[in-house]
Length: 122
Length: 446
Image (cartoon, rainbow over the protein chains, first blue to last red):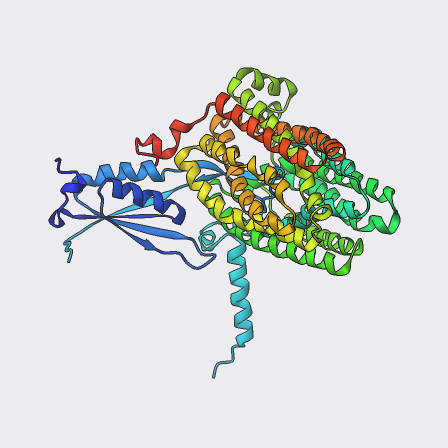
């Protein structure tokens, strides 16, 4: 088992806190991928009301060696891509003509890395 | 002692909250003032224009049915409107590209002529009686749809210019929620009004309301601050020449197969599409209020479905989502032959709302995945021409078939045609299944 394998991670080896800020809809895919790759993470919902930005933060404790692997993984799931979204409401008429759609950029994430002085799990 | 007026504070807070909501959410405060202002006016336009559309789309067919139109005439109305709209799409794209201020193209077409036609829908029974009124409304519908489609490319281009690409997902998410709630409320109220006031006055009142809503939408759209003096792009203009469109079809066999399968799909849709609400009223005895309510059911079902299919689209790829939804959609028209009460439509419309949300989202994203930024305008134009032209043929055929063979045959044929079209798509059209974001990272897509 290599040193940057998350499964080998012990409480003492955690010396970085990675904070990922992303849109609510993108969080499910990231969490699932992180768990599949044995990262331990915490999700903080920061939605600001109905019309506020539906934003979430994912906190991941890692060792220095895992940092690049984790960034690559986050980039693979959260990288921006283009998608058509409905542009004239969501009033779908069954069996009618297709609604107006417009190209949009989906799926950005901001990643912050902070040093961790001490980490304990009880 | 505080001298502040609590009502004034409340109003200021309310105004601030409405401004934030119309701009798409609190994230918008980081954008420049002009962009925020544009986002607010654009939301206001969408709110009122979609409310107007909800009334017209839901009640126009049963309005002319109440005025004495036959099923052949209803099919003809849908067919001619789609046909004229198809022919005006490319000239509209060229004018939209050449115009220095695109908003005036929109305001004179969909924001002007179309809305005047809606006002005349309401006035026709005061001027004409009997069959002449039906013919006049068919002519007005053809003019309205033609004008709306003429200005559609300019509207799309202007939308692209005033809403930053990176914020569109969030902005349209909030905007669509507001519009969704408003259009459902308007549809319900309009249906109730028609049922209480009676025929044809109830319809005339709601089309009058639709005109007023449309006028407010045009007023909002006129406040958009367009980037100054848009210069025509010769490359964009060249994309719409007949030779460029034909070359596209010659060069990309996969796109040709996609168009052929969508032609068959939309032909099958067009056969039955205009007659569902006619069937509800004439065979199941539904009132206008029930027709509106049943359309709302599918809208409500589509709201969570859009989000679900958006994520599924990322994981499985647009082609697979199209096939999954496309194989289930043919069940919907066939289910109509087993209905004997308006309430039997509820589960069908829930299913339709969910599946259509997925299919529409996936079909546009499939188009995105098989085109490049350079040829996307051409691909989109060809796709729209294919959809509208075959819908027009389908509606004309449907009108003939309903009159001669009855509704059940039309519903079965529509289901069979959709099934054949999606099988054709499945077998012949290749997609981007291996390139969805999750798969590209070498991760399992389950």
